[in-house]
Length: 230
Ligand SMILES: *Cc1c(COP(=O)(O)O)cnc(C)c1O
Image 1 (tube, rainbow, N blue to C red):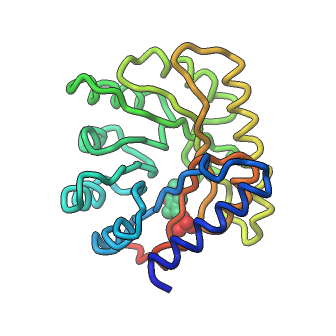
Image 2: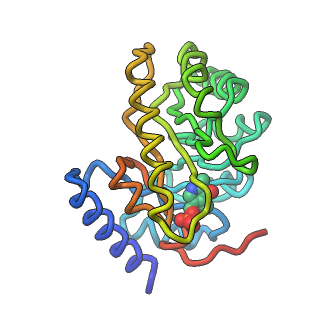
């Protein structure tokens, strides 16, 4: 199967999952996760109509972004060190992984330089696994309040990564909990905070995530094949 075939197959599965849940398939956007994949693979997916790509490693991301066409919408989805934020300004349209106020403040500072506004998601570590990034379930409302006061970023929603399961059904409670948290934050009526985006679901479980309300699914290996970890 080529990258174009894989993309067609995934769009079909997105459509079916959305319809099962009584949702408009157009309300789900596919983020093609291209970490560790060469620029040629991104170019092939772009050629097949894919526009949004997700990257995890700053150096690899900026190298690729500068070699590829400017119409790509790059999302940063990996854990982010504060001192690397400056490299993302100007090329990133959405950062999925904001999990602490110091990181939000640095994004605000970097985007202020060009008088821009950076769209962000707050990442929540629902399982509480120590190896996962993300703010705690109990801390996310406070993080939303603090972050909302920063003029050069805009909170668009939440992101989570459940623990790894072989059985996608087991991830469902984590997706449901993220949706519930988005509702709780919406009810707080914090100025400048919207909860329209839920970034959840990967190659193994994106259909379950869509059934639970995902608007952004982050799919890597099901599009590009296995990754070569560095
Ligand atoms: C790598 C990665 C993905 C994609 O994972 P696949 O299982 O290859 O689809 C999604 N989200 C994040 C945050 C990732 O790091």
